[in-house]
Structures are given as structure tokens and as C-alpha cells.
Image (cartoon, one colour):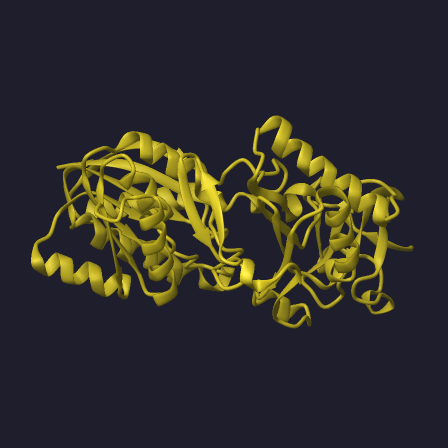
Length: 388
């Protein structure tokens, strides 16, 4: 294990060490090498991690100790993550098992869908442990299916290929049937967005489900219909809109298996175009869900993303009845909760409407937020009641 020295850190206990914080020649290190990190001025141990000299975040720490990164390390780390989910959160079947930095395994995401495990590896440093990670999952869980869903664009920046494949099990076992509260969902981790389902919105979906009954609503960026199905089971009627043919097909099937097809209608359309059509027709809704993909994927896109969220929510407010409910979200890491609240406030002001903030939600608790790493908090979900 190689030593590397850094300057005094501005952010204690962050797992990220940036290139400009390093006080050793980076050309001496190979990408993916495991290093022990010391502060040069005091010779104090900072921790153990892997290095990528070409990345702005040059070191990602795996431990605050001088620790051997081997099979024992990964087994202990994954067991610790499991204990948190099962003992503290009471999640048993479907949840995010490993959430990258938040579980001290930066560059690794593992989602559990009952007996199927979906792995995403985001960095070259974590890629070298792929076989060990798979072996560890086999030993602990004995899964029926393991899927590698390595299709995130960030892999290309790490010099890694894009790939999707089944490591264990057969494709004929897909799609999977999972449960969330009293609802069932068909998902396909191999073909769907992310790992097949947005587990991070679980608590916000269940909050809204308890809030609204017997209304007519709109579910924008509906994907596989997770918001719609929950609300339809409470007696609400909804229109879901998404621009993916496959997502619409799965959403319709999810409505069928939950016996709510009469309450759910799903339309394939561009969301912005659909909103404008509805405004022209003078349509009004009792509630609207806005759950778009990230508009901001890097700091350079932030201003454009803010404009996008403002435009979207400004248009949506024109479709809400007096007293209507708006559930609006942002999963853009580079926009803070305070900034998102300002965006929504400006959208209300533009429409000459006032709002009451009923619920200020974040990601589900199986996506932990590290106090000393605000980057791990990315999801914002506001539920508001609108009045003139």
C-alpha cells in the first residue's frame, strides 16, 4: 500500500480529496491504486482510499484508518449496511443496500429487489473489486439473480466501458414483481432507468398517499407509475405522462396487477408539450405530481437547470385548482433544498399564488445522508397546498 501526502483539509471527515489538496506528485500513482493518506504538515493519518490521478476528486476514502482493503473489509462493510437497513429501518425485502459514500463504499451502489441484487460501479477504483463484491453478495445473501447495471455516463469519464449484463440467473426471470406498502410493481432492472425503480421516493410517495383521497390528479414523468398506483389505490383518479413507450407499458401493467386500471390512464407524450396542451384546453386538477429526471448533472449546467425547474413548475401551477396540492421534486445534487424552495417560491409569485408547505421531504432513509458530506443529500420533495 502506497503512502500519499496532502495539505491540511478544509473539510474534515469528507471522503473526497481533491487534486489541489494533494501534496505528492500524482504521476507516481496508478489509477485505482490503494493509498494511505497522511497530512504532510502533522504526519497525521487521514485514512485509506483509492486514487485516480486524472479525476478532480483524486482520492476517495474507504476508511479513516490504515486498513487493508480486501474480502474481509467488503464483507464487514456490506454486513454493516445490511444491519442498518434491517435492524434500524426495518427494511426486509426491497431497499438500497449500499449507497456509495454514505456507506463508506464510494463508487458502489447495490439495490436489493428481494432475491435479485443490482450492482452499479461508478469509478475505476471500485471496478477493481467487482469480482470480490459479487463473491461477497453470494456468500451473505445467496441471491437468485445478480445484475450489473453499469450504464451511467460517469463511467466513461473514469475510462470504464458501459455495460448491462446478468451475472447470475436468467433474463426470462424478468421483469420482477416487488412490493411497496400494499402496492405491487413490475420492474425490469436490466432495461429500466437507474436500477429499475426509484426507491429514494418511497417515503414521499407514502406521505402523499395518506394526504389525498378522491381527487383527480396528474402524474408528470410518471415512469412505471409508482406515484399513480399508490394514489389510485386510495380512490383517486390520475393521468400519468411519460415520454417512454416502455415505461408507459409497464405502468399500465402495474395498474392492472393492482386492480386500479379504471383509475389510471397513462399517456406517452413530451411532458412540457402535454402541460401546454392542457393549459390551452383550460383543464384543472386537484393535485399534480412533478418528479422529473435531474435537470442539473454538473455545476456548469446549474443556471440552465434552475430555469428548467422554474419554467416547469410555473406551467404546472396554471393547471391546479384553488386549494390544489402540488408535489414537486428535484434530484439534482447541485441544487440545494434552499435553492429549490426559492425556485418554487418564484414560480408561485409569477402565477400570483400563495402556498403552504405541508411536507419538506428528502430521500428515503436507505439512502443515508452523511452530516459531513452534504453532497450525499440530493433529493428534494416539497408538498404544497395552493390558494389564491
